[in-house]
Length: 617
Image 1 (cartoon, one colour):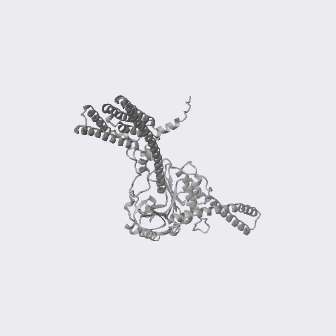
Image 2 (cartoon, one colour):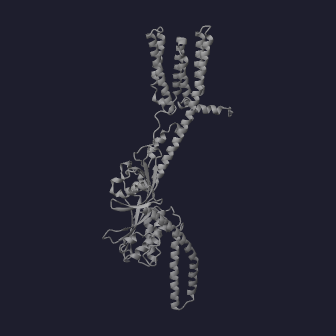
Image 3 (cartoon, rainbow, N blue to C red):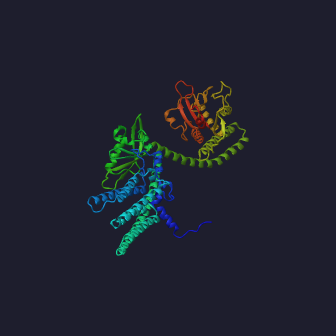
């Protein structure tokens, strides 16, 4: 049965949580470990931090001891100082003959001084942020020793001892480090001790005065306990809030560094002298600097290749302005490479008058990437428009084809039949163009499958079908295709229809631009040495492709043939990318029969697992 909640109980529990006593582990810890001990977040920062800072500094580590431990240390030093002063006072009193020497008092003061000195040697484990089971007993023993020693001194020295000043120390210590109830209990014990001593040691005429002084001193101790406990609770709440804020700030800083590091654009922080203060890896790669943990050792003025960058920064500092859209500049890096970068500058200035240094934040982008992005957007828009047009053409084209076929059935004149054949051929050509345009539209190629196919077997079948479809010899030695395929099966994840379409496009290009002699087309399949990929190459013996044509090979609607759509290689690349494969053009070495090579690199399933489990790798 659930116990009913007592009014005010939640407030009392909140006060207990706020007391430093809970911080020392005397009460059940109610704070999450991440807030009581922010060290894990700080220790994880160097492993996760990927944004390169100049000095490789990590976020500031928390203090070695939390605030309760520092307060306890302060009280321990105060107790040790008080014990030394008590011994010194007894020595001075005896030296000047003010009172008779009491070895009991000397022994008591010496014992307290020794105990206070030993308290300075508190085990380090008791001062760590996480709760420890012996902290409560340690603090209770410390306060108990104070109450016992001061009580005995009060009984031995009587009214000559200022007991209220002595009892203020354990009351303050309990109020700062313990719950409010325990602090008031310590004040009550001290007040009762002073009242008892005043009652027994005062004469009949002085009893009233002594009791009043003891009562006022006790009331002062209660006030000290209540006020100190409230201040300690408020300080605990503020420190907990600060810890939460610090943890959130560190987390946000880590997120910002990860975001900046993953950016494809470069971010570079440079001062007026050209010293790199911070940089992400993308910026270092763009300017041709080595990616390392200490980019602050790099100065832009030290390398001649960075002179245009330095001139742009000096100009921006001098004018105080920079175009909002940025400005292009060219760097000549080594090995000889001209790289055009778009530079956007922002300035950060310190508002404090003693800090007048301004930092320049550079956002660097590769112009080639920008142009490729714009080109992709244009191609996507063009593809959508072309798909719409092709869809509108398909229905009239089907009607034209059907009407031409019906007319051809009633035509007997050879000239008219020849004209009907011309119409049929061009209608078929238009149909292929429409199919290609619809294929490159979004979703037109279909989703990639996950079935495994045997590459050597399928390539043999596709090559034979292509030869039969084009009416070419199939017999080895007479066929224009020379196959070099492995004898053992080689499985890959590739949709069969998509593989057929890639191969047909490559074979058509090789036949069109080759010598069309037996063996003019070479189809080679082999597993790469890493065991994770296979390379399929389709080569032809035609003239080498010129550089001005090579750079546009895989662009849509680019063709060197008058009757081509320019979508064949573009479709091949799109299909390969759906299965994690890649396609590229490569000119063969001099002396090879196949001069123009189109190489498709296909990933092999399970290769990563084999490399992981192989004990010999």
